Structures are given as C-alpha cells and as structure tokens.
Image (cartoon, rainbow, N blue to C red):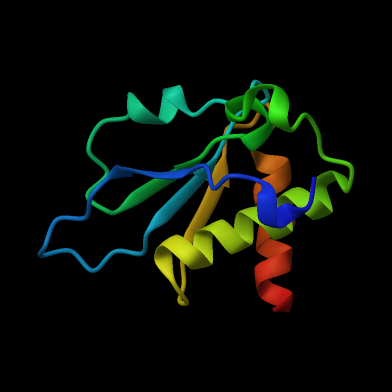
Length: 112
C-alpha cells in the first residue's frame, strides 16, 4: 500500500498549558503498536502527542512495513509535521520498541 494510503495515527494526549512554551513531546508506540501507556502519564505541562502503529489500527487493510524502519520514520515524520508543523520537538518512545523508530525519525528530521 502506498504511504499516501496509510492512515495518520497521531493523536494529542495532553494539551499545553497556555502559560507554557515548552517543546511539544511526541512519543512513538511500543512493540505492540499501541500508545495506551502514554495516556496514563500524569501531567507533563507540555503538549504531548502519541503515534500508534497504523498496521495495528487499520485492521486487514494494511499489514506491514515493507520499507522497514526507514519507511516508518518517513511516515511518522510526515505525521508530525502535518500535525505540529515545523520547529523543534522532543521525540521518544518506550524502550521495548518505540526508541528504534523514534531514533530513525530523528535522523530523518535532522537530514531534511
């Protein structure tokens, strides 16, 4: 399936307090593809987004990453820029898996 047909799976988990100018935080899913654990975090006093795995959320329509971490990083960077726009962000993920695509995405962002 072409990347244009893969659904955006970024969602805002916490809104930034109006008095804060902290960088937005974007967290990438764990190995299971879900972001539930990020919804249970206490207030971080910054805008926070979470990206779940589109393969998990799209059911039978799309089941894989033929292009590996590179494809995942490019898609996630596009989601981030579409949702947040240009500028600095904090990017992370749960260590079971999320740190791998977040590192790839940060390298992609740095190179663009």
